[in-house]
Image (cartoon, rainbow, N blue to C red; front, side):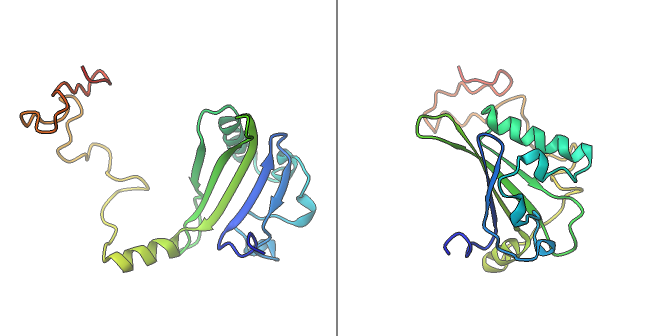
Length: 171
């Protein structure tokens, strides 16, 4: 009951790439962002995603490999081409057994738009600018200067004043 009441879709694939669980939040898979049906439970991830075009299947393989190999703890995506009013987000999180070995992936899928709209309304903030999904636009970094490091204010912060943004480490 608890998992089915979550306001998003939850899935789990184990360390053998076997799709084992989804919270079945929507009985009709056509209303789901990550369409799943009960007969898929127990299938390998490659079987669950077999209807995807090869380019998208490569993305699935990359996510699984990245999490399995420990390159990242999570991968977040926004599915392009969603209808107006929908920001279809997928969060894939690596899971681990108590001994630290890889246990699989949990996936949370939801429409981020209502959450964003609520946040903006509650805080009185708004989204501005940008020329694409990632602002600022190319070359538009305001007055940022990544080659000189932080401003020297007489070491008011007590950090030794040795920041060096070009070498990647402080002195």
